[in-house]
Image 1 (spheres, rainbow, N blue to C red):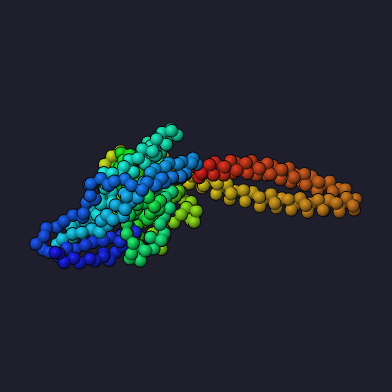
Image 2 (cartoon, rainbow, N blue to C red; image 1 turned 180 degrees about the vertical axis):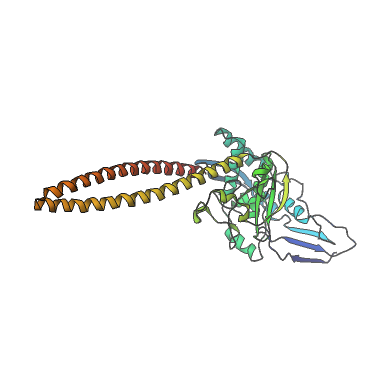
Length: 381
């Protein structure tokens, strides 16, 4: 029998309490974490689960059968990293690998990836768009706020992708493991992005280096909240461990392009998961963000000009009103000579006023066109 000591790392990482179990027998050689048993599990207690989500203003649904027996298997599977003697240098990579491995009886990832791909092909989506469809699927899975609070308080544990799908909820690490597995199944290069200080995890998808997050060759993918395109790096709610939702913050108040700024989070530790295809859609996203930002600046300039023009012709309106009052008095006094002189001035000013109004209305039309175009771009962003 080995005397077993259990301690928890001082730092909570990735919204999961990283369990480390030390076996204190120095005659033993170091061991890797326990592998998920390869023996197939008998599939019992089926449960049909339907997932519904939105991508690019289109509604999607898929149903899959899950099994209570497999769920129980994963619930009881290792969630603590065990080692003997010195802590292995790459222990985190081995620890995360536990959650990325499936039991032979579990084909849920391949089935869901296939279903998402089929749905995308039916809508004539490109390969990159199918990746985005997969991300919105994972984002639509509710965030497990209750377990996040437990984990942040030093309790709770990370879940396997099957548990996340079965319960239809998860924290950042759960949903990141799920999306990383889906990307791998879809044939894309992927990695896990670990933010120690922020206690957060996200997924990196292989993309062109010049467009990548942190110049890492991977584009950031946020799984905890909907609305974030691949490459967008959100603010993290430190009390919840999840991205600040789009609807609770005006992310476009400064710049759409700023949402892709890697400075929004600290520098992550990157753990490659799989090699594969490159996601190229980031170039389109960045180009669209630049277009929106440029259009936003044009709108601001137009607003400023319209305000100045309105102030200008409002002054003319006031002058015309004063002149009308004076003309009535002159007419009443029958001072026709001064009346006629003032009429000429009045008509000249009125002519200029009408010209200004015409220019103003043309600018208003242009402004409205740009606003409509801006809104259409924002809706597609």
